[in-house]
Image 1: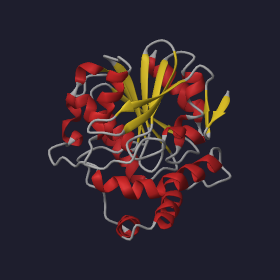
Image 2: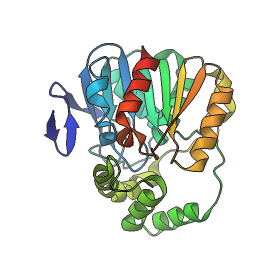
Image 3: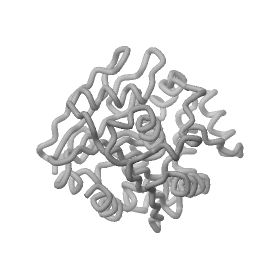
Length: 271
C-alpha cells in the first residue's frame, strides 16, 4: 500500500482524469482484475470512502472508483450536470459494457437511477445506506439546519452537521479521522457544486423498484439515520431479487467503520 494525496490505494492502481459530459473532469482509479465493479460514494464525501474496501475487493475484481462531480479531486462544475451521465462517461472511458455497481447514499441513488435507465449495463447492485430518488424525506430540525447552512454558504456549519448526523459513532470509531478530514475537505466544494446538480421530476426509482431485474444486496448500519433503515426495508420488500443485511456498530460511513464485514458481503454477493 502507498499513500497518494491522502488516499490508500493498491500499488497497481491506474489514476486517470475522465472527461466529464459538458466539460471538466472526473478523477477515477482502477485496480485489480476480474469482473468489473464500480464504487460510488455519497454526498459530501469522495472516493476515499472506499480506502479500506478496495485492496481486498481488487484481489478478486476489476475495481473502479471515482470522485463525483465537484467533490474530491474532480473538477467543480460550471453548468448543470447529471450524475447518471457522469457514470456513463466513467464506464465508457474504461470500456466497461457491463459492471456491478456498489453505491452508498447518493451513490446508491445514482446506481438505482442508472440501472432503471440502462438495465443492460448492470450485472448486480449493492446498495449501502442508500437513498432513492422519489423518496419523501421527513422535514425535521436537521433538514432545516442543512438548508440554512447551504443558503448561507457556511461550509463549517455544513461539515459539523454532516459529522453529527451521519457520523454519529465519532472520531474514535474506526475510520473516524479520515471521515473528519474528508468531510472538511469537501464542505466548500459541496456548497459550490450542489446547486448545479440536475433534478429530474420524473426520475422516481422508488415507484419503479419492481422493474429491477438484477440481484441486489441492501446493507445499512444499525447506527445509521432511521430514514435509511426505512428506505432499506422498502427496497428489500419491493425489489424482486433483493436481500438485506444490517451491520452492527456502523453508522452512515459503513465502508470505513466496518470494511471487513462489507467486503465479505460484497464478495459473496458478487461471486
